[in-house]
Image (cartoon, rainbow, N blue to C red):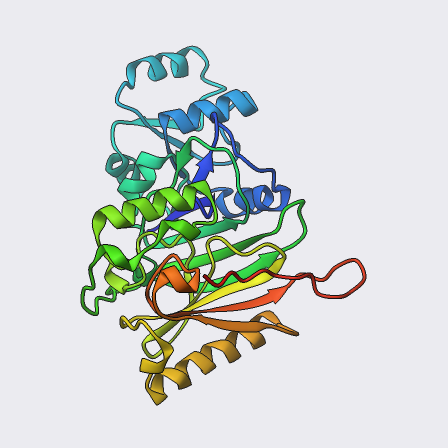
Length: 327
C-alpha cells in the first residue's frame, strides 16, 4: 500500500481558512477528484465536518475514513442515515484507518493539520500544490524537510485565476545531514517579505540555526526540484513581484560568500541553472548571488544562495521590472 499525502499551501504554509480553502483553483480541485476517485481518503473529524458543510454529503466515489476520538455520535448518525454515510468508516486513530484500508493500492491523507503531522513521518508520497500569494488563513501545514523527498513531477499551472505549481514527491531512503551551523546572526527579519515570513524568521532566530543547512531545512516551504553535487534548486517561497519564475540555488555546505566557492561548486551551480532554463523554457533571466552579511545584502539568510529569476511579460510584450533589493 502506498500512503499518500495530498494538500495545497502557500509560502506561509496556509492550507485552510474558516473550514474552507483560501483560494479557488478549479483545475486543482478537478485533479484532486481524479487522483482520489475510487480510493480511500483519510481525514480528521473537522475536515470531514467542513466537507459536509460544503457539499452536504461525504466525498462521493471514495471511502471516507474519519479519525475521531468520539465515534459514538457518528455511528448513531450512520445508523439513522445509512444512505448518506454508507461510504464512511469511523476510526479512533490514523493507524487504525490505514490498517482497515489494507490491501488498497493507495490511500490518501487529506487533512487537517494534526492528521498531516502524524502522517508525514511514514508517508510514501506527496501530491503538493504550491499556491503563490498572500492569503488569510487559520490552518497551516506542518514543517517537513525537503531533503528527505525526491521530486518526480513538477509543472507550473496557468489555467486558473491564480498561478500555482503542482509537484509529486517520493520519500528518499535517507535524509541529508552535512553538519550543523548555528548562530543568531545567520538570519535577519528586516527583509522578510510577508508577515508569515517574518514569523518564520523569528522562529529561526529563537532556534539559533542556519535554515538553509540540510538538517535544518524545515522552514523552506517548497520541494527540491533538482540536485547537483552539493547544490540544490528549489522555488522561492516568497517570489519577488513581477517574477514569472523565481528559483533559489542553495549549497548544502555552509558558505557565506561566493569567493569561497570551489571550481566544482561553480560547475554545479551552472549545471542547475542550465537545467532550470531547459526544464522551464526560460527565455531570459537574471541570476544574482546573496553573499556576505545580511545587513548589507538585503537577504534574510546568511548562507550563500543564488536567485534565478525570469520576469513576467507586460501587455506590451516587454518584461516587467523585478526589484531585487540590495541592502
